[in-house]
Image 1 (cartoon, rainbow, N blue to C red):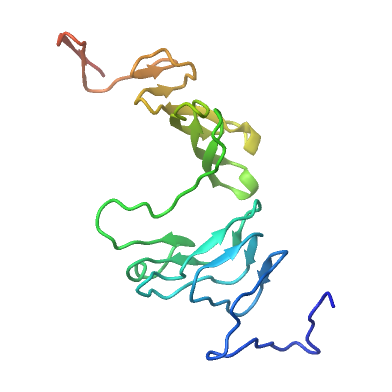
Image 2: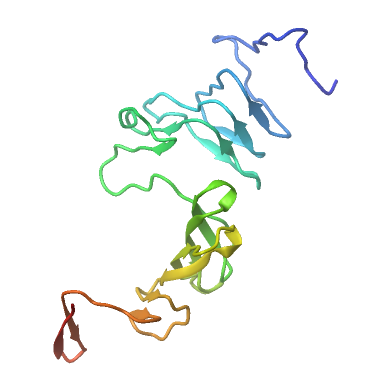
Length: 220
């Protein structure tokens, strides 16, 4: 049969703490609207995971949650608090709605956003703002070249001004992989700092060249 439906609004228990299912294959995603969803190992979804309650995990020697991998092309959506900890508990409450925490020493990559398109103009972005992309800003990694060359990704910043649609996002600043910074200009002139439009400098600014000659400008 196509559906497993209880006779009343009750809870089905599949297995026990000592007698468990080994593998569970799900074709069209899983939706958890109430109650708890618990896994002690890694859990892989080939379809989006929609959760309307809280998602949390307790820290263990292998890290809280094990791992949750969203391998599908759709977006996983979490409504509520999502806490992911590693090598210890997350920071003390109150938690943020989405919090990733690591207690390992050194510089740690605690979150990664990527795609597998190795063509110029492709990349990954984080968008922050109002609902459904309106009134938002965006930070992106954009490939400057295509494979088999080095992709040379740039960090690009977008904002909207006197507009609100996601389609109104406009590039404002680009930090290229070679260290060149472009503000208000998209064509690369080859200079380390490139600014399109007027610029005001406050304080003293020292200008130099490869020969070591310097000039000090006093701003106001």
